[in-house]
Image (cartoon, rainbow over the protein chains, first blue to last red):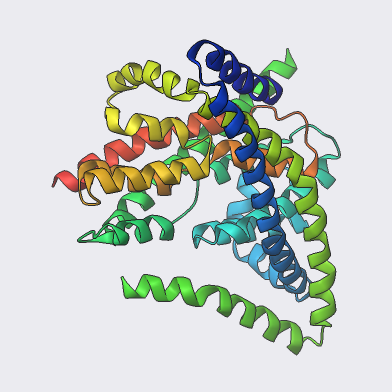
Amino acid sequence: MVNLIWAFMAIIGIVYAMFNGTMENVNQALFEGADEAVTLSIGLVSVLVFWLGLMRVAEKAGLLKVLTSLFKPLVTRLFPEIPKDHPAMGYILSNFTANIFGLGNAATPMGIKAMEEMKKISGSDKASRSMITFLVINTSSLTIIPTTVIAIRMQYDSVAPTEIVGTTILATLFTTISAIMVDRLFYYRRVRKSKK
Amino acid sequence: MSIITTISTWIIPCIILFVLLVATWKKLPTYELFVEGGKEGIKMAVSLLPFLLGMMVSIAILRGSGAMDAMIQFISPFLAIVGVPSEIVPLSIIRPISGTAALGMTTELIKTYGPDSFIGRLASTMQGSTDTTLYILTVYFGAVGIRKMGDALKVGLIADFIGIIASIVIVSIVFSV
């Protein structure tokens, strides 16, 4: 699926450019895109090193375990495949917490760690049930206070820059719950298919 | 307003303070643990680079050629039937694909229509309530070497669509009163 999407985005773009005389723009965009990816990855180094370092300290201090036990009833229901005291739970919860507080750059390292731990459980290169659930919750976003958006609104002289916090929370809540339900639906469909 | 800004500036330093206090109290070698954990970050960032670069180049070609705009123009009338305002259609299509492009579009919409207009509020809500699905899948699956994504992309995109509709409905209801 990803292979197809990836190839087709490029193929469609290049073929379109052939007929619309935008080949020069394609050339420019191509290398700008590559540059942007390198800049982004290098920018990620600082964030990854910092948060993974701090998380190691937090993990050894037993803080991730405390976090897990606080939300145990909720996460065990969301991720029935993961053993109750598995370190994956701690990282999943740290990722959710970082997302909720809008710490986007802290959420990524913790999310990758969570994925690593979940891969240890499944031991294959195929996305497991818990991985899909985890990703879907992440893509539907958990942000409660969208700081970037508030900053942009202030910049353009909004009378009430934070008035969208309420609607964002409502939309986030609704989307995340729907995402979890859609995820469950697809999971049961997979189970039924494999039974046949 | 000031409460929210205060919270967001205080939160990270307070997390660091808390973690270090507990770890020191438990007599852990904090600095060594930090360095050891941090080393992993370098490996991760390097292994992520090809995934990000491949995806971003492909997206850049699609956008640069003008094919993306053509596709948006083609899809707009269909989304309009479901009740998506035409001004917001490009943003709703770009949001799952590219985070930087979506942020740029949100800024543009807020600038053009004003932050306190219906479109401005809707763009703000949409920007905040969903995330860049393609980026998250690329980074998370890429970093740990998952090759078969299963239903992840499908479910993610369905959730994005629900998010767009939910934002429109919620903003219409909340700000019409």
